[in-house]
Image 1 (cartoon, rainbow, N blue to C red):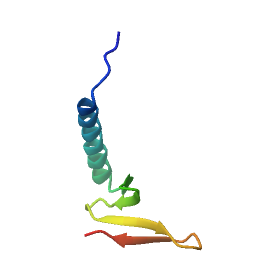
Image 2: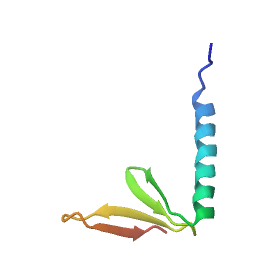
Image 3: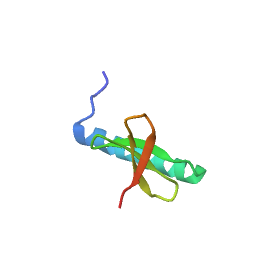
Image 4: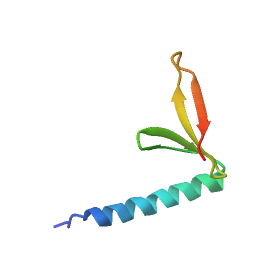
Length: 66
């Protein structure tokens, strides 16, 4: 029988996976895209973060996060 993971164990697994993916993207010079608090985020290889939004015409606009 397989034991189910607790919420804390799952959070640790997801955090480790996130760090691994982030490092691989950075090493490859690729941006990382993800959702955070309901916003689309693009993080470039240098660690700069941008919020991605679409205007009324469907054009992509990026705002730099501080």
